[in-house]
Length: 205
Image 1 (cartoon, helix red, strand yellow):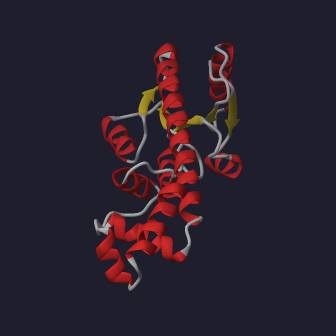
Image 2 (image 1 turned 120 degrees about the horizontal axis):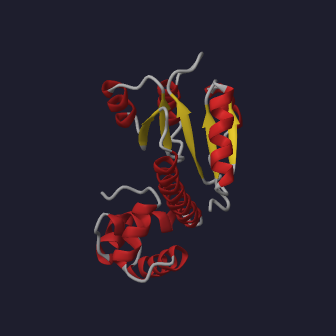
């Protein structure tokens, strides 16, 4: 059911960690157990599709502190919080910090599995988006300095004649650079080019 995905279970309670791991493994999901938040952070490969199930109350770094740290690292893996001592304020804080969901022990196994599958689907979507962005960034990096200037001018809504005047070059030269930019970025129109540049991280000006 998970295929290429890994579910990370973070809980200092060995019995709880292994019990949850057994349940998920019996459903065909690949799991990895971590006895602490530090252990997870030391072994986590954010490039691999997956999600994180984290207990709230743990010695050292708590589950909520882990959630904050993952947020600072821009970790793309969805996080589901689990606790035996949950309350409404704690759940609200966890959700505001980016948790996908908040379960209280004893956990409803099937409800958890349903959310895990949703988390894995989200992780795959984020991974695909990340790959697409990396490809676009690579295309942008292939532009020459002059092509980049022309691309930014197009992004700003400047016409070819205006770009030529701005850069002090001929209209024909602008057209050639613009053609090269369109070709390297794989854009079929000016609107398409703008969309690709924004997706690559260039802000519209």
